[in-house]
Length: 450
Image 1 (cartoon, rainbow, N blue to C red):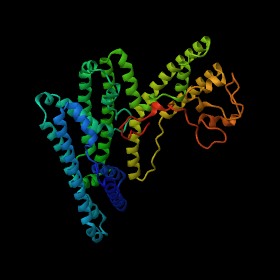
Image 2 (spheres, rainbow, N blue to C red):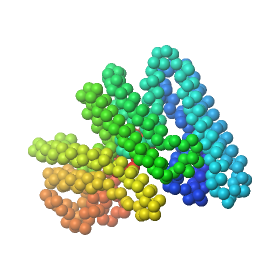
Image 3 (cartoon, rainbow, N blue to C red):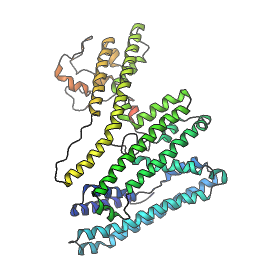
Image 4 (cartoon, rainbow, N blue to C red):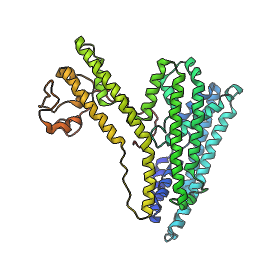
């Protein structure tokens, strides 16, 4: 899509944010206005065409028509965006004349944006309806399922809490299941998608609020009614998250056993990475357990050590998950309470999540098991393990085999960061050591972690 979209967004954002600063708008209003940049992006991109082709099983002729419809949509979007920009540029002289009335300035600037938001929504709706017109009856029967999948695809990234911005369709897609299995689990997928779409729509209604215009939203910001709506938004976010949690279990129960455990593992890792991503210690320990070159007695000792660690880390992960689910909403509620404190002239209170202590305890447990592994292996055997450099001792201060302490304790913090005494940057894991932390393709910005 060839457009000066970035230039428009930058200029628009600067203008609106500047006006908000002049007006000394409340924080709630600024956050809402900041979201206006979303309206400067299309609802659909050319890459989304594949969703229609695969979801509706379009034939070659239909694909050509759909591609043309997408091109028409992009052209119409560019024309509409340029029209909005021209309207804003046309009122520059009026803005100078109203320099002493910043609220009136904001009203003038927001008017073309308000009009464009409505036009943008109509363009997206029209594209979907145009595609639907070319469907045959057999494809029409798939429309409801496809429409849910499309809505979730466009909306899941609006999540704020861990687990809220999970799209289980992505997990299943990445597993590349055979057609028979896909058909077998479809009822469970439909159950989740129906519940998820409803929960997301309820959330969207609250996010929009009851106000017809942007100015009404700004004027109502941080009122008692608005703060109550923000509390209800948190409840709606919890509902979306819980819907996804139920979906994980429901789909897993419908999958064959050989796929169920991987589905749950992948879904939890993507939904709650703070709790379930592989720890640095886990990578090293599992690499040791996979090595068959050690003497048999060493292999058995390593296996027992790793099994013990994995059992304990599983319990630690479960405690971290519970803390995240309990404390992330509380963190958001505390932000609302801080807004009230500021309005009342009181000092805000910094929220400190108990989850951090649990994560730190898991990290310390990992270091303890790494030291136990080091006692079982020679220095060369340990250093050859994937990710072992993170736990390497400082240069010139080798760890004595069998000892759990460095010869120079002052370097302990440096070792934990994978740094040598003379280095200024952390050491890097060998190639592939961070592979499981890679963000899934196309994934949008995730929620702030607890």
